Amino acid sequence: MADHLGVRAGATLSVPHRTGGPLVVTRLQGLLAPGVQTPPLKQEAAYSIVVQVRPLQHHDFIVGGRQVHTGAVPADAVSVVSLADCPRSVMSGPLDAVQFYVPHALVDAVARENDVPPPSHLAWPRADRDPVAAGLVTLLLPALAEPGPARAMFVEHTAMAFLAHALARYGGGAAPAARPVRSGLSPWQERRARDMMQARFGTALTIAEVARACKLSPSYFAAAFRRSTGQSPHRTLSDLRIAEAKRLMLGTGLPLAEVALLCGFGDQSYFTRAFSQAIGTSPGQWRRLNRQDGSAAHQAEDL
Image (cartoon, rainbow, N blue to C red; front, side):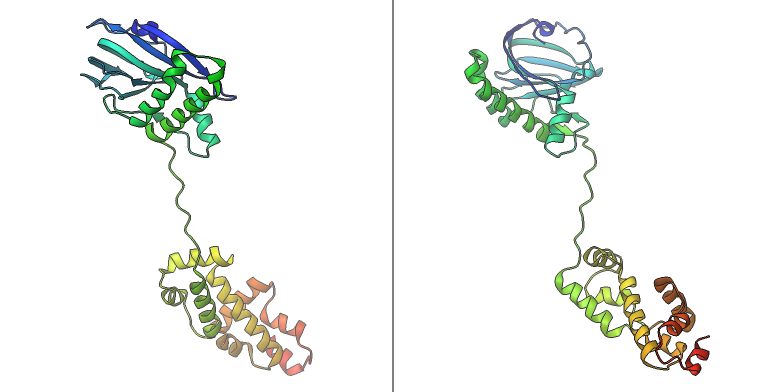
C-alpha cells in the first residue's frame, strides 16, 4: 500500500490467525503530490481499513469506477474498502495513517468463531470519524514505533479487538437474521387452555374459543400451544374426546352414535374417522376387542 501511494511505510506488524490468514498493520507516512492518481491496485480478496492519525488535506476516492468521496479528511476518519473493488485515489498533503490489511477469509473466520453471520462486505463513509477505531490505533502506535517480542501479545489482542469492532461497526449486508423464536404459552395460558378443553371437550368447543380465553389469536395460540406441549391443540382436544369415548364404550351400553355426541364429535361418522386415525381400528372393533361382558346385544349394535 505504501508503494501504491508513493509514501514511506513505517513498521509493519503481522498478527497471524490459524485459519483466516494474517491481519497486517502498517503506519503510512509521507507527503502526497497533488493531482497524482494512484495506479490500480492488484485485485485481492482483502479489505484495506485506513485510520487517519492526522487530517488529510484532500482525497478524491474512487471505488469500482464510482467516486465515493472528494474533499478533506479529518483525523480519526476511517476508510474501509475491499481491494477486490479496484480502489483508486487522488490525494494531496501530508499523510499520516494506519492501515489494517484484512483478508476476506479472516473476516469470515472471526465471524464464525463468534457465532455471528459473516458480513457480505465491510463499508464506512470516508470522511466519518470513528473514535473507537482511533483509540485502538493510538494504543498500537507505540508498538508500531518500537516493535518487539515483549509487545507481541498486546499487539495481537489490540489488533483483534480492532477487527471485532470493524465487524460490528462496518459490517453490512449480513445474512438475514433468523426470525425471532416466539415463546410458547405462559403457565397461566397453558393451564387455562388445558382446563377449558378438559371441561368442555364434550361440547362443540373450537380452538378459536380457547385462543380467545388465552388472549391470543388462533394462529399464534396454535403455534405456542405446540411449542409448550409438543402437540397441536386439535390433537389434544381429540385425545381427550377419544379417552372419554373409550371409557363410555367400556363402561356403558350406549350406542356409538350417542357416544360420539357425548364426546363432542358431532356425529358418528366423524367419530369413527377420528378414532380410527388415532387408534388404528374403528370404535366398534375396539369395543368388541375390549368389552369384558361380550353381550350379544352390544356386539350386534357395534357391527
